[in-house]
Length: 270
Ligand SMILES: Nc1nc2c(ncn2[C@@H]2O[C@H](COP(=O)(O)OP(=O)(O)OP(=O)(O)O)[C@@H](O)[C@H]2O)c(=O)[nH]1
Image (cartoon, rainbow, N blue to C red; front, side):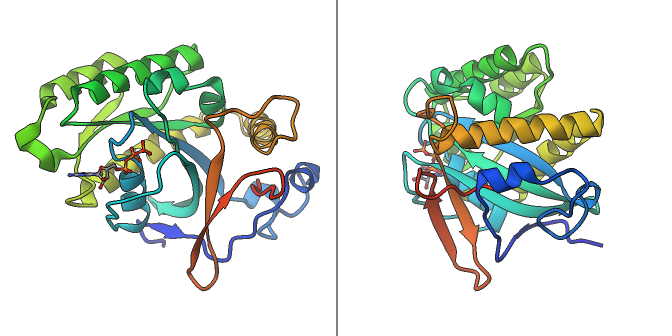
């Protein structure tokens, strides 16, 4: 039985792209297990206007801790092993740093890579609420006709005196887009944040299971390796300005390091 909490994967080995693509489907995977025994992988993208608390929420979910200041203007990719409902999955969370007019920066690279989406706004910012609506529109447009598992996350509930967006408005927007809605405060508690992420992981996982496995695996390998190729400038596509995540890796001593993905350091494994 596994604990119902996300766990940092320590001592994670990060490999280059070419090696990864060569692994035949019957060969042992990087954990030394046959492919069919490897963990399900869920890829989550966190989107929202600038400063709404995307990093605070992501770190709150992953570590239960609240850290009030983060490096800005970089995308971060977190990889963790999560046990939920006694099912262990490898979860990758891309915390995207979008600038003004965030919805215009949501690209098909994000939607091709991501399987589940957290769309965040801040209750003290009507502008961020409108951005969230535009992001949900953009996701649906880019993913159409495929259904998009997403949650709408209203953050900074603790700032109620300065509230510009009511709970009812948040609910109405989520109903309009057919997604779940949570109002939370990354600053106050990890509970709501954890429930929200877990709901999305469940939905994303359920959707994965409805797809035929071999085909889905092939598609995800191609999609990720293409994305990684463009991230590190090796692929035929030009590098996307919005998809250059820094990988957060936790070593066996528990020390966390940030690695920027650039030409010299190809670093994401399948
Ligand atoms: N009061 C309050 N402040 C919060 C909360 N969550 C985040 N913040 C603050 O909001 C600011 C922005 O938080 P970030 O997590 O960096 O926001 P972000 O969306 O990742 O920012 P960018 O990556 O620059 O777009 C920081 O000063 C946080 O401390 C919250 O729940 N309540």
